[in-house]
Amino acid sequence: MKSTILLGLALGALSIFALESGANDVLERSISPSRQFVIYGGDAGLRGAISTLAERLKGDVLGVLEQRDNWKTAAVINLQARAANLPEVPMSAFHVSQTPSGLKLQLDLTISRELNPETLEREILRLILLEMIYRKQTGIASGETYVTPPPWLVEGLLALGPNGDRGSLVNMLNVSQRVPSLEEFLQQRPELLDSASRAIYRAYSFAFVQLLANDPNQLGRYIDNLTFSTNDSLADLQKSFPRLAGKDFEKTWRAKIDNVIDSRRTELLGFGESEAQLEALLQALSLEALCHKKLDATQKLELKKFSEDLMLLAAHANPALRPIVENYQQLAAQLALGKNHGVAAKLSDLKKLRMQLGARMSEIDDYMNWFEATQLKTASGLFETVKVSLDPSETRPRRHDNFSTYLDAMESQF
Image (cartoon, rainbow, N blue to C red):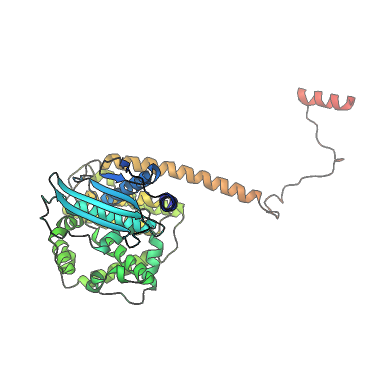
């Protein structure tokens, strides 16, 4: 959320500057840390913000897909000011072309007051997915239309990221009067919807991508094969996801919507209760023991159920602990797929992080208790049984140690 706010401020500042001063003749560039994104135009501050945003969004997608960063084609992001004599220039435009050196991906962004951070995130994520879609393609024939990622996939992945406002999305599912059929949902065009309907579409996208992300490998293969997609989105999905291929796919879809709504019907748990529930789950199934051996079918099913339980806990866990719960869930899903490389080290790091977070939260609780106690305007009654005399003439027992005797003698002299 903080990065989105800062990015919005940077966009606003640049739009004002661009409108007043115009674009420079020579475009400077910045290269992101992974070297996948080459950003032209704007000033160094804005290019840095775009670079950070692109790397964060890519990391979020890789986390959902449980993949390493294996990008092949660098992507150009061209920042340009809106020209006064060309007001009809769109806010964003993609260019996919074949060059002698290989595939070229470019996103043109027109920086103005109309370009909000949410739109910017959406366009950059679409660029990231385009690179994944065409990563294994040797070339694009001249004049061929390139395939764009489905809008529900873009919206759903954004909502699944750490910055996604899941609470408001679930609330939108709650207020939705009718759950559309899966086929009806897939055929919707969000750019034609009003703001309220688009918010509901975003909520359904979140639930659907969360359903598909239960099997990250299948979701990854689906993205890889989008170049071969047809006009029948449901049929394409049923080829990649067996759980949608049966006659009960509508029941699966509606059950997922109900599950997401139910997961947020209760209030968010406090930190202590969230930690207690997480500890109970981890005690019931030891991930440390399972990451060092080959798993049988029964253990993989147990891990899958364990992963689902962690996902439900993450939905209403304390926000401070939620990222840790989600990391445990991702590791459990990884083990269920038979991939144990690096899991033991990550589990050890998570355990240390939990201990540090628990100690810090305990310190915060102690401080808050002290603060509340110092702000009391009425007597608490805790010390009513203690007799404290306010009469100065009342005799008190004298102490007879050397220092007290010395003080008594000094008092009698003066």
